[in-house]
Image (cartoon, rainbow, N blue to C red; front, top):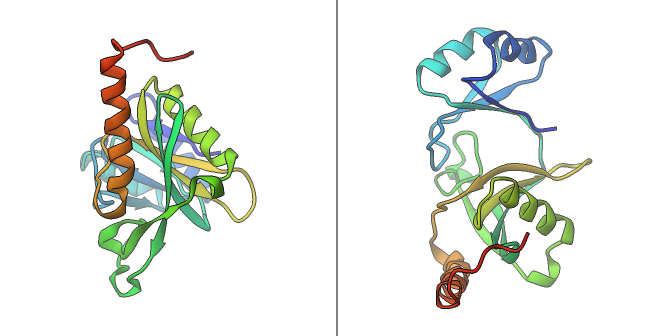
Amino acid sequence: ALQIFDTQRASLEALEGLVDEGRPFFARTLVHSKGRDIKAILEPWQIAPAIAAGAGFFTEYVTSEREFRVWIYRKRHLGTYEKVLRRPADYKRLGRNYDNGFDFSGIENDAVPEELKEISRKAVALLGLDFGAVDVLEKRQGPLVVLEVNSAPGVSGERRKVIQQLATRVARWAVNGYPNREE
């Protein structure tokens, strides 16, 4: 299972124990974009410098075959994209992002597995959000893994179609008097 450690709650010893067990992880700042802040933690001595450099959480490394971004608004699926390597020559560091040669490729709603939609709905609801663009990893074997929930994802290219759907739904919500989210 994916484990996230908040540096204010987790001890240095617990993080060091993961590395000692041969379980690498990534350190990131709390506010980030484009994967520029990702630091691989492969040895215990790397933890303290990562924290000193502003790392706010740590995510265990999970091998994956594919990565998706699933857009959810008020428990409704708006759209799903797969992150696809289109420019292999640009791949220079960790992460599936634009600067690293990846682009988003839209998936027709009927082709999106219900399990992918449901895990994304649950991730957004767990955080108490009305909206989230959920990054989900598909492993070769085993369950899907939520990587993160983006509350303010960047939008360009074909993803504008989904952000337009989101804007329409938010406007409808406002016109209807801001009703509470269905529990």
